[in-house]
Amino acid sequence: MSDLSINPRAAPRSNLFRIRTVALMLVIGILGFVGTLVMGAFAPDLRSGHNGGTHALSNAAVGFSGIVQLAEATGRNPQIIRSAHQFDSEDLLVVTPDQGFDDVSSVLAARSAKPTLFVLPKWATVADPDHTGWVRIADLTAPIDPGSLLSPQTEFKIRRVRSGGAPLVASADFDPAIHFVAPRVLQVISGQVPHKGDKPKPLVPLITDGKGGIVLARYGNGPLYVLADPDLMSNAGLKNPRQAAAALAILDWMNSTGAKSIGFDVTLNGFGHSQSPLKLAFTPPFLAMTLALAAVLFLVGWHALGRFGPIRPRARAIAFGKTALVENSAKLIRRAGRETSLGGRYAQVIRERAVATFGVPARLKDAALDAYLDKLGAWRGRRFSELARTAETTRDQDALVAAAQALHQWQKEKKT
Image (cartoon, rainbow, N blue to C red):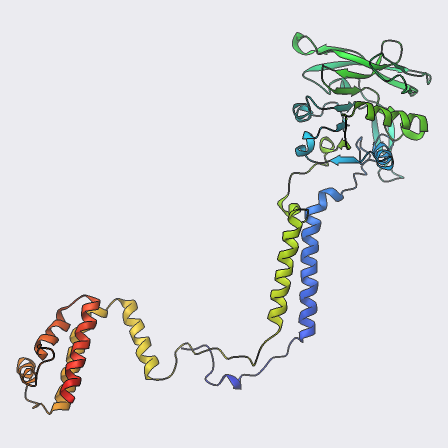
């Protein structure tokens, strides 16, 4: 049965939506879908980071967005590191954990021979209710907090002293042209406690308070540095132009020769993200392929909007006419797997036609009828009974077709 009416032209036409309305709906839907994909791909990068933390995105007093903006303004090309896959750069990496108990093992493993600066935490803060993203200083953290940053390799002995704003002292291994003034409450490293009695790595002082307290040190024999007091680089500490210039000078001194940028890690502060295939589709070099696919889809849609000629009605599921009926019947027989069992029936059809065509007496049946038809003549040396027997007994499809053709030719020759 067909799901169409016999006269498709009689079906009423529906103009529920105009072409312009449909086109507008499609454009809005496509733009909304693409916008959702783009926002989903770049959402981690669009987070402001204004949560009052001690990281490179924070504009709070204890944050480090100021040094990032200053480095950008002076052509140092700072980079916000959001993935551990970016740790393999030879450029300096500045790590500013929120607390000393954060796990920095991944950074240490990837940066063992590359310049890296760890800035120890110092202040305990609370959110400022009057300004979003600002904090208020509540107190100093417990000394064990910043001292545990490189645990379990070592634990630093942390001491806080009132400096009175005295200048800090550069050691012989450091650049004497870099001058810092100590903050009022200065956090220093006074020593280290090795883990389980192991011999600790050497802690080489680079900047001290002049009284045995270490403010900046090189840890071990590689380019791994530890800044004890974050106020030398934090937003609050950069309000003095001389301090800001000295902070930039420290970063330049630590950076590799020929470095092109300075990295500021935010993965330890909860702003990292993993590699996203969706983001790759919207960034070079895969952006070109994405645009090419978009252009192809646009052309396909544009082509679909233009119709050539009138709408062609769908064809009937079962066509009219004897030929269509025969073809459909043949398909049903073929699907049922009964082709090879039709040879005897076809031979019987030829008998009945021969009786009607050649005036065979109606009293003749079965063997007598075949004997009478044999007397009418043979086709290529084969009599009718032999041809009929072959059609009835064969079970090979090709042989059955050949037998049916032979019966048809026998009947055709007898007519002529």
